[in-house]
Image 1 (cartoon, rainbow, N blue to C red):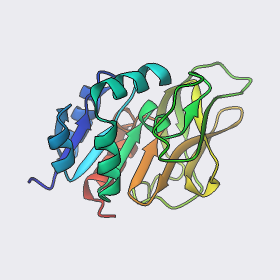
Image 2 (image 1 turned 90 degrees about the vertical axis):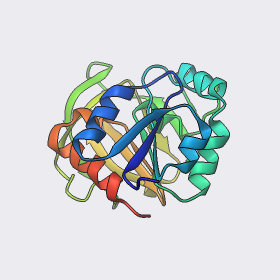
Image 3 (image 1 turned 180 degrees about the horizontal axis):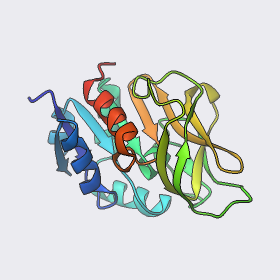
Image 4 (image 1 turned 180 degrees about the vertical axis):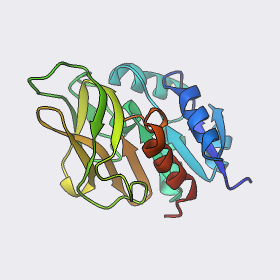
Length: 204
């Protein structure tokens, strides 16, 4: 198995090709796949996501890959959620009441309550609040967001960075081998590519 290989989970929702291209730029060997064995065999796995929480979760369940995700996480290998992929790792979302998330983290995803325009779209500055193996030089960096909802973890120690958008917004989370970015690293220029490179090289 190529140690540079990163499986991007294809469940019909997500910026698959932009993530794929970002990973190619940092020398990874990405593969877009809905095959459980390929995901389980890959040294690293990314869960992308674009759109509504409920729609993404419905497609993920329909793909039959929920158990594959749990097995991947339990294996201890690096696992990264991006945008709605991060949100799916929580218990549920105000966007889709009654739809259960993966519950890898305790807490809910909530509408951003801000005087500013929603969705939050564009470049914002990161403030690191807890260590992340993927964000060693990310404090103060500008990254690209497109979202109306953000995670609200019960355990605040899993928050690795925040951003200010008229209110404090959780920008990333992490615990053990699980990390998540609310922003799009593949669209965040050199800062984002540095985070993807750190993911490629990370050994939890």
